[in-house]
Length: 636
Ligand code: AMP
Image 1 (cartoon, rainbow, N blue to C red):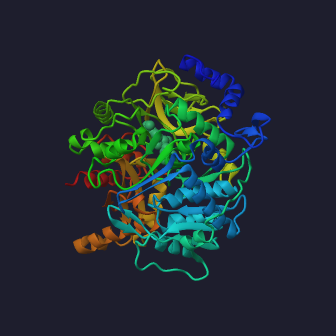
Image 2 (cartoon, rainbow, N blue to C red):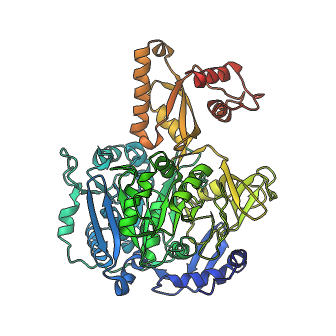
Image 3 (cartoon, rainbow, N blue to C red):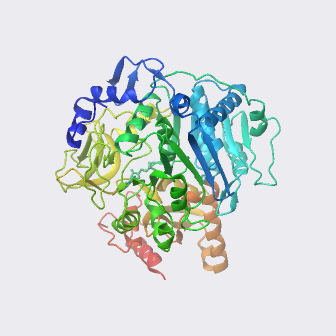
């Protein structure tokens, strides 16, 4: 590719200074039905359109175009250590299944622009459904299975899907999670329920119930469409491909909206420049399809690049902690993508699990989603004897903002740093108050100068103003995208992420707004007030702690009633948000520390919970509240 300049700094500069030239070259990595006539339209910043006038399709690029050269190559490798089932789909078979699924959707009246909500465990049908949606120009919204009925209902009401595609159940460590029951409950709670529910009956739930006239059996519908061939719907490059909800500081999640052409080009380029992957190789991304990493690097990225991709249903330590390395050996995995939390879990296991498999096929391990601590990074680098790349990104960007870019130039890795600005990203570290750029080793907020490169969110679903207000109004004098992360940068341009500047916490690589958890806790009618903070945790990076003021304090006098209430509050969170948001601990207190203007001092609560100094307390209304928090967190 002509973009390959010899040194990375020059390559990065070119991607910013001659962005049009740069991305025009990259666009040739994918197939276009109609060529674009303008690389980028930035006339309505911060809204950007990439590859204007071009028409393409994500499914065509991920599946159809490989039929010529890769018809019999493995495309999707499904491995379940929960059901002990493995199934490999070649590109031809994947194409067939996607067509069948698209036919089912089409028969049910799905047309371009309709939304389909996918609430599925890690099964191949979830991938078929995603690809079938984009084949038809329908917009998928995949919701992570760990979210409960209320969270699902919020997402239903925002996306207003025509259909929900779900399964009877998922499995986690052999325990069934009954998806269908959660969907029924969510539909009951929702104001805009879908017309139909398509149900994949895996045979896990023996008491599966069907709602007559609404619920349809996927297997039957599929059987009726075995020979279906559904033409690809050619889409404008800027047409939406999917919505993916993510948490922020408000209780209401935002629907990150992704385009079609820009996303395909961004992922295709990243496969070579960041992941050094070659078509025909195998990629193993251990995330869930409900998260952005799953969208970009289980499904679209590797398939667009003509790779074989592994879809793994199970835990990293079952049937034993060597399972991932056995998979690497058996499928000759070249590129692996995981999370620091998963590696910390494996680090606690005996070393022989790692050493009993031949992992020599591996070229690199990529980690993202949360800070990677040095001991974990060192341990896994030494054990695997391949480069371990930390890289930093967000649901919003769809691919890495900060990374090492070994496909362009081999640069040293620095412990604790996710690397430097990825090509296409004009990263600036700004002083929070003045908005001025800070110098080396000075703390600032990570921001991106528009236009955001291809692949990034184009807006918040249905809420253009919220897109601007949330991401582009942090600084008075400049319209820049803020990541809400603090960082410092060294003289060589390596960044070190210091944590979030807002009330968002990161639990095992998953972003959760403390407000969301607080709302879930408050759904228990005994809860008068609550503050949730994220505190450091050895394995998960961070975990939520809840400080709760109850309406009737006499309940707390009786230890049985107190325990009962504790369990009920946890159950309330399970019911409304799901296990992802479950507080590690609940502390009952008689009041929360607040400023005189009524703002809860979360920073001080968090500091105390981590055994640190609570900081400036001059605005505090009642010192006793802080003392109570201190006692609560130091109690054995
Ligand atoms: P999500 O959108 O859920 O992937 O969460 C994105 C957030 O996770 C970022 O804003 C960071 O706070 C954090 N994050 C992601 N990758 C890294 C990383 N490599 N190092 C430190 N923090 C990270």
